[in-house]
Image (cartoon, rainbow, N blue to C red; front, side, top):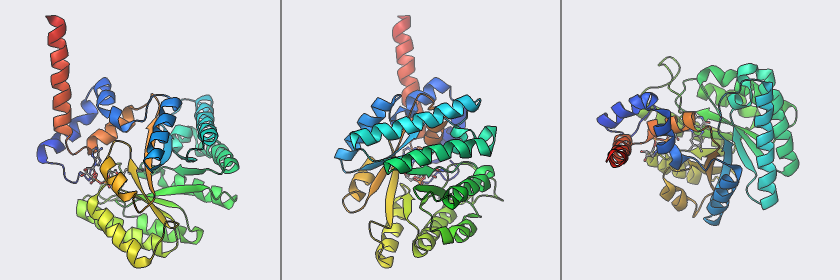
Length: 313
Ligand code: FAD
C-alpha cells in the first residue's frame, strides 16, 4: 500500500517485493486475513464474532470472471450466502466487487448480476456494499450505484477512498442521495495526478471527508485501523451529535482485533470477513499493509527452511 503508516524502511522494501513472493507463500501468510475456504467456515466465524458483539460483512473472494457463466455463479454464491445468513439469524450484510460479478465482461453484465443480489438481499432484509476498486473503475461503479438507487433500491451502499483527489467532489455530487458510504483510505496505488501520496494528507482528507459526509446526513461506515483517525472520528461524532443510527466502525478480519473489541463497547463495529479459495489478490494487498511484513516473511522462510532441512535429513 502506498500509505504504509507505521512501516519502517526495511518493511517498506519487503512490502514492495510482495508481488514477487510465490503465491503459496502469500496464501499461507495471508490466511489470518481470510475467514476460511468455505461458506460453512465463514458462517462459523461470523457466529463467533457475533458472540463478541461484533457485526460482520461477508465478502466472497474473487476479482475476475472468465465468462457470463462464472459471473452468474458468483451472484448465485452471494445469494446462497445471504440465504444461509438469514436461516441462522446472522447479520445480513455482504460486500462485493464489480470485477467479481463480471465488470470485465461489460458493466451491463456486472449491473445485471449485482441487481439480482441486491434484490434478493432486499427480500431478506439485508444490505449490500459495493466495494471500490481501482480509480479507472470509479465512474462506472458510481453510475451503477446511482442506477440501483434510481430503481428504488435502498439497501445498497458504496465506498469512497480518502486518498483520491476527486473524492470531495464525489461526496458533493452524491449528497442528494444521502448515500450509505464506507469511507476508507483506499488500498489501490494511484499515480500522483489521481491520488495523494503523503500519508498525512490522506489522513487529513479522511477526517475532512468524514465530517462532510456526517454533516450531509449520510450514514458512514468508518473503515480504518489508524488510531489517529479513530480518535478524530470519535471527536467528530461527539461534536456533531451522531448516534448509532448515523455511523459505525469497520475493520478487516485479522487486523487490530483489540481495537474492534474496544470500540464495540460503545459503537457498532463491523468486521469484513472475506472467504473462499481465491484469496491470492486479497492476501497480497493485506500483506503489503502489514507493518511487520519483513518479520512475517522472515519467520515463514525460516520455518520453510527448517521443514526442508528436516526432510533432507
Ligand atoms: P494504515 O495506516 O494502513 O493502518 C493503520 C494500522 O492498522 C497499522 O499501523 C497497523 O497497526 C494496522 N494494520 C493495517 N493493515 C494491516 C495489515 N494488513 N496487517 C496488520 N496490521 C495492519 N480499500 C479500498 O480501496 N476499497 C474498498 O472497498 C475497501 N474496503 C475496506 C473495508 C474495510 C472494512 C476496511 C477496514 C478497509 C477497506 N479498504 C478498502 C482498505 C483501506 O482502504 C485501507 O487500505 C486499509 O484499511 C488500511 O488502512 P488504515 O486506514 O487501516 O491505515
